[in-house]
Length: 568
Image (cartoon, rainbow, N blue to C red):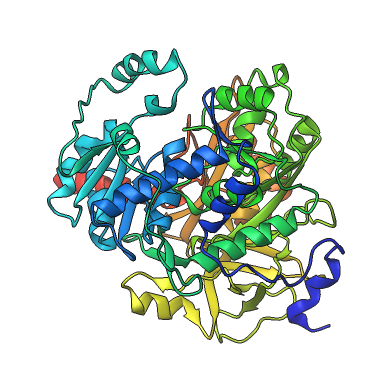
């Protein structure tokens, strides 16, 4: 067996190594399942439910309304919403109208929002009422022509819809009065003044973009990742094959991961629509709300991130809730500590496995098998029709088994490129291979391991130190809830290892205790030299800890310190 395909020997008979993917627009699956399962619940949101037939009806009405305002094939609509029914309706309506979705983080500030709108050239935006002042502020500097405004209350059941505006006023200290006009459109007005007769648009799934998904931009400006209908369809159908013990029309998927991030969009929203599962939507991650929702709604699938699972496991009321409905979870966005995996499986009796992917790959490329051979600490093996290699950083040649190099992937889920950034595209896409910027290796069995981001590797005193290895050790310490390790400037070693630690509630420890603990489990040069205890760590919307932000803070502190010395 060739080195490239050695992982295929581990595939169980239920998972094909190659799949015939549907060459159809992504929205076709909503139309099909609305016919096949018209009365089945498509989503649940804070006590209110919507059937597949109703979801299709509203998406058609919105597509028709957008077209009546001049929206045409290839136009872009920014969706700036949390997980709510409007986010799902807007997404599929935009695709039905022949448009391209630009997922936009509702937490963006004006500078971030303006950049993304200008870069993408979005002409429509769908946003919450509380975000309208922000959109209005940046609008004049963008190509926006129309704003569609909605509110959480629009889909709340009685009496929550009456109470919510008062909660909103108290929480955000603001009341936004949006009015229907030529360029501002109220959600309920739109649905009540439109028919389902949208004009069908011919879509080439292989070539036409469905999505511009912006990368996190933790360094430099975010880049718009161009994903076609086919990219997204293929990745969901891979996911469906991987979860072979699940059944179409029967699963319930918990939607905690935000849909404005590609991971939540694929594994929750698009997966639910394609497999006729019911998605249970939560607009934000609050531990108690998630526990209550699992206990009450009985989800069977729970895609998440390590920080989400950590938050649940460390909640003081965990034992009050029944989590036994959960059959399977694929964890992504960050390394999954083995201790978290083991404890979560004990609590739920379900399976939690680590996967891997990037925005540029729709996003999943590798995962451990859910019900078959898995290796803790590994990201698993490539998904069907996905190839992966390790390349030496120095020479660009293929690395040996067990040798650390840059992970590269190839498959039908790989992006077309970066929007309006040909040079950056050519830097990462070479002969069909996407170079991920992640360092890792493949073992004899064909299982892959990520040791760290290329740019996160710490070089201290000439030694290469991978933060993930140190973090794994810290997570095994009983009193640590979260930990992240970064390299900070050091005049002697070049860089030195610093650990940022969040302790479990009620737990106390000292730097000296942690130092002694780490020295028992790590080579001396890998042991953190500095520890900083924090109440929380900076994170992205999907719970990925922002190591770069912590490094930037260190740089700023050093700068301020040097300025202070000069003024003395």
